Structures are given as C-alpha cells and as structure tokens.
Amino acid sequence: KQWRDMTAQVNGAWNEIKDRMDALAVAARQPLTDWEEAEKARIDECEAVIRKIADAAIVTLDDTADSVRSRGGEIWAIEISADRFREMFERAQGAKDRAVNDLKFALARLTREEAERAELDRLRAAEAERIAKEQADREAREEQERAAAEAKAAEERRAAAEKAEQERIARVQKEAEDRAKREAEAAADAERLRIQRKHEEALAAERRRAEEAERAAQ
Image (cartoon, rainbow, N blue to C red; front, top):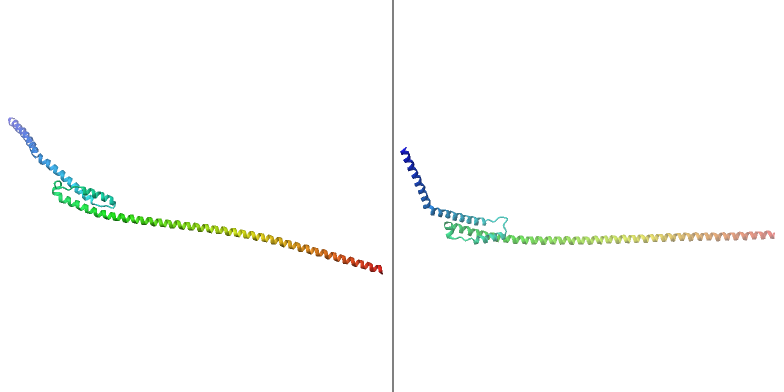
C-alpha cells in the first residue's frame, strides 16, 4: 500500500511536470507557430491572387470589350511585390504579364469584332430601310395604279352609261320619228283616199247628172 501510494505520488508529480513541459514547449514554439500561420495566410493570399489573375485572363463568349477592358484594368492595378510574394514572385508576375497580354489581344479582337458587328448592323438596318422604302414605294405605285384603274373603270362605266343613254334617246327619237312618219303616211293615205273618194263621188254625181240630162233630152 505504501508502495502504491508512493507510485501514485510519483505519477501525479510526473503528470504535473509533463503538463508544465508541454506548456513550455507550446510557449517556446509559439513564435514559430505564429510565423507558420502568417506564412500560410500569406501563401493562401498569394495563391488566391494568382488564381484571380489566371481566371481573369479567361475570355468567354459572354465577354465584351467593356468587360475585358474592366478586368484588364483590375489586373493591371494588382501590385506584385517581391516582399509579399517572395518565392512565388516570378510565378505571380508571369501570370500577371500573361493575363495582361491575353486581355490586350482579346480587347483588340473584341473591339474589332464589335466594330464589325456594329457596321454589319448598320448595313442591315440600311438594307432593311431600303427594302421598307421600296416596299412603301411599290405599295404607293400599286395604290396609284389601282386608283387609276378604278378611275378609268369608272370613266368607262360613265362613258358606257352616257353612250347607252344617248343610244336610248336616239332610239326613242327614231321610234318617235318612225311613228310620226307612219302617222303622216297614214294621214296622207287617208287624205288621198278621201280625195279619191270625193273625186269618185264627184264623177259619179257628174255621170248621174249627165245621164239624167240625157234621159230628159230623150
């Protein structure tokens, strides 16, 4: 029992000494730990900057000259210092140089393409305007031709109606003249018959008188 108690005391003392030594070890290493954490943060930050530069250099189909120009300005403004990047300085500077060059080429290409698209849009708009004007002119000519045709048809109908009316009037006049001529001829015939009958009656009367005179003389 005494031995076990002494062993327990030794173990307790050992545990206390171990805790103190561990604390001293942590305290002794704290500057290195702080430096390692700071170095890790620096490295992570530098890696993030390099990734940002690399990502910014990627030009997608959705990019425009303005978006590339804006990203290029942001990348150009990033400072790559030797104190900050240390062993990654050359890699970071190379990534920045490549990104700037790539964005310059992309900016020139997009500017040219956008100018070409703008010119193409202008030409298409001009062509559309020309086609619309031709369509409007054609419709105007067709409308004029239709109006002229309608006016001509109306004039022809009016002329035909006038001619028909003139023919009707002429027909009525001719019918009236024919009727008057027939009536005149009928009247003349009647007059001739009347005269003839009167003449015949006069001759008959003269014959009767002559016969009566002859009978009286006999």
